[in-house]
Image (cartoon, rainbow, N blue to C red; front, side, top):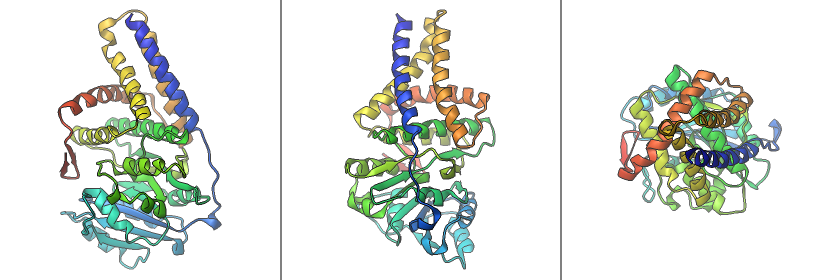
Length: 365
């Protein structure tokens, strides 16, 4: 009986993954370099003295016409040397502007408030956001902007991997690719489930149309909140191409505690998903839960079933890595599977008892 239930759950999981693969495989038309729109890049930074220089150095090397780009750096009330590092770097670099997040907007807090403040300083229609712990390739912004072929395109999202310093960080990088490839596939079949603010872009006019962040109910996952608000308008295109030219690399969590806080924050935000998103999440949970408890119901059929689950995941994220110009090592994939299995099953249980989120030294309930 256990084997039959396991097979049914895996079969439904396989169907969902197949749909995601179809969506993630979509390609979209692009503008040539001579027709790129003007862009405003926003980076919100709080206590990022160890990361901010690498980020802004990469932004300074972007291949984009100087008369079509501005970069707004928001010091989100840092208590370390983040602001000083920014000031020293951007001196005599006119495309950079630094502001301090100080104007209150409704009930906004933290990073969401910082971004909302920055948007008021932007002068261009296309807004691109990334994080202070990220490094962009020279072609990143150009490629993102190229997908805004006409006014019907409201949002374009990009892929993110992580610096692979050791097995712990490599495992997290595989996880990022898995989650964002899922987000890509879901968005491209018209059923958005998530995106990530460290590689996200949208039209300022449409951001204003949904009321801006201050017009939306506050969320610890402001990127997801804006995605769903724009989708709710039902009159614009949201694109999520898997394109190696849109790839940026971020710093992975360095400790288990930091990783726990990240996953909990994302999980709290995920509770706001629509019904179809919750169904997909539920079967992801069930597929991993069945693997976790399978030793207690062990028979000869269990090994093929677990192997089936591993093959589904590998043949999903393996080609995505290849398309992004990344290498998926078998040991990192297997570490990811163990890690993914544990946090997908444990995190929902944690949320039953606590939804308090700790993020950048601040607490949100």
